[in-house]
Structures are given as C-alpha cells and as structure tokens.
Length: 478
Image (cartoon, rainbow, N blue to C red; front, top):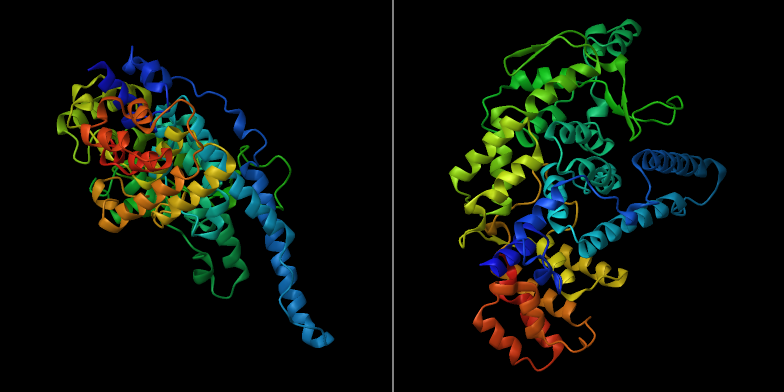
C-alpha cells in the first residue's frame, strides 16, 4: 500500500516520478505532499527574466516601430521610394526570443522540480485563470502572470491569488479592462463637454469582459444565480483598473504594471450579488473580489475543480463538500483545502485516477527519462503543440479541458505513440539500467504485468522506453 501511495503522490498529485523519487518518498507519501504546501521556494531559474513592466515598455516600443513603418510606407509614393516590405522591427525579434525563453525556462523548472505537487498546483491555477496567447497582447504576459501573480500565491489565500491575477497586466489586457470607462467618470464627462453630442460622448465604453469571467469562471461559477445587472455593476466597480503606459509618471503603478486610473472610474455605490459597496475608487473592486473569494458558490465551484483535477473526472460529492466546508471555515485558504483533500480516503482509493493531458504526458515523460536540456525541451514543446495543448493557448478564458473525453480520442492516442518514440529516440544508452527498471522506478505499483513483459522483451533501450511512455499504465495519473 505504501508503494502504491508513493506512486500516487508522485504521479497523480505531482507531475510524474523521476527515477529514484518513489523510493525517496516511500516512507511518508502524504508527508512529502504536505511539506510542499508551505511558503513558495525561490527558483533561481527565473532570475533575469523580464518582468511585466519591462514587457509593457518593450511592447510600447514595438508599437511605435509599427507606427513609424506605416508612416514611411504612406510617405513612400510621394517621395518616389520603393514601397516594399520594411525590415522586421528588431525589438519584435527580441520579444519573440524572450517569450520562447520564458517557455523553455518554465518547462525546465517543471522537469527538474522536486516539489512537483506545488508545480502542479501552479499549473492548475494557471489554467483556471487562463489567458490565451492567440490574442497577440496576451502572448507577452501569460508566462509572466504565472510567475508573478500565480506562483507566489498558489498555496496561500485565494483572495490574494484572485486579486493578484485580476490586477495583473496579462488579465487586464486579455479581457480589455484597460479600455473600460465609466459613463459618469471624469474622462467621460470631459469628453461630453467637448462634444456636440454629449450623451454619445459619455458612453465611451464600459467593458464587461473581466467582470463576467471573474464571476462565471474564476469564482462563483456559471450557475451561481447572479444576473446581468450584477455583471454590469461589478464592471463599473473595476473601471479604472488599467496598466502602465509610456506617458505615465515615473513610479506609477503597483510594481507589476497595474495602475488605477481614477479619472476612468465610475463613481457611486454598486450593488453586486445582493450587497451594496460604497467604497471609493479602487477599493470598491477589491472589496467585491474579497467577498467573491469566500462566497459559498465559489467554495463549491473551486473545490469541485480541484477534486476533479486531482482525484477523478466525476469526484465523490462527499469529498467536494468536505473541501468546500474547509474553504469556508478557513476563509479560502488553499493549503487548508489541499490538506483536507490529502487527508481524505477518497483521494487515495484505487478508483482515483486521471487521464493525462498532453501537458501531463510530455512533462512526465521528460521527468521519467531525465530529458532536461534545452534541445529536449524545445522538441517537447513542439510535440505538445502537435498533441493539441500548446502552452498558454487554450483559445478560451475557460482554459483547457480537464477530463479524459477531452484528450482520449483515437487520433490523439496515435499521436502520443509517435511522440513517445520521438522522445525515446533522444535517449542515450541508460548506463546499467533497462526499460523494465525504468518502468518500475517511475510507475511503482502501477506498472502492470503486460507492460512489464513488453519492456522485458524490448529489443533496444529506445524501443523499450517508447513502449513504456506509450503504455496505458503511463497514460494515467494513477
């Protein structure tokens, strides 16, 4: 039983066992997991990466280069010049290299981490607060948002995590809140005074995107009973939540690129989900977020998502309710909710297992095979995209799917077999080790007899490792 729990700790709660890891945690699997719920460790690999204010400044420079290029093209006919394609802006190349480096470092941290339960929680919250890089502006901030807002708060109070994410430039720009202006704000009133159509000028644009997704996806859930009026009132409360711009005074913002623009904020009290908020300015939106973070609907919605992610596609209702009660009793303490999960027999039962997403499959394969240099990880990112889950590209604020039906189709499984072979082909000969020994080391009690026989009969290390990675036993977080 202990070796089975060690395998579950590393492979279902973590990101997949590395060789030697199961024997190291075999004595106390739950204790190994619980130890990862403390303060987040410093990760040296992230040192030197550009922060969000830096990316905002670089993006502003790229935008200026684009405007300059358009002006040159527009002026070219009058000057009799060639209107051919202008050279690519140098800073755009720099941004592309920086963003690729972000992905490589992120994956490298996951492959090497000895705290893979914490890393899985980081990835869970990153997918919960999804922003998709197919929207150009979001491509700059998905990885920094995970580093700056999610990672430090992944096991803390949900209210702190929620506030950090919703005020991060990544989320504000992805859901267009920097454009949201209250109809009765100072900006709207000034525009009305300068216009011969004052009523139209005052309607510069209240944007409901962020408010709607916070309520529908990030906190309460779609069936919590809030109304369109609640969404509109919440959207008014967070008008003025914006990002640093080049013309802002030095020192503006909260350190990670957030700026509250009082002139864009809709004045007055707001009534959201039955409660009236009379706070002024930024504090109004903060107060609403704090209440949403500990609402019973939020407790149930997120306890269900956590249980679904770690236990089963259809987790036991009794487990979800137990976690939700802890959520409410602790004021939304994520670590306490996770402790309740880990203390529950349902989380360790033989029926508790999850089919790996492409991200799970690729990361666990890299960890099992110790494929951790940049060339290996670059290939792995390409394979993950081929399998349908390119990092930070869910194409929806709802994030990637988290149940077997989303990833287990015949074509998807065939592509996994191909990916398994490509990764196995990168392996050198394993000194003194065999594919069977590798399977025993990373799957423990989850290695079934049929797979063990196939590994024993493999004609080469590469063939055996490919069989292991493609095996049904490896496709499940059991």
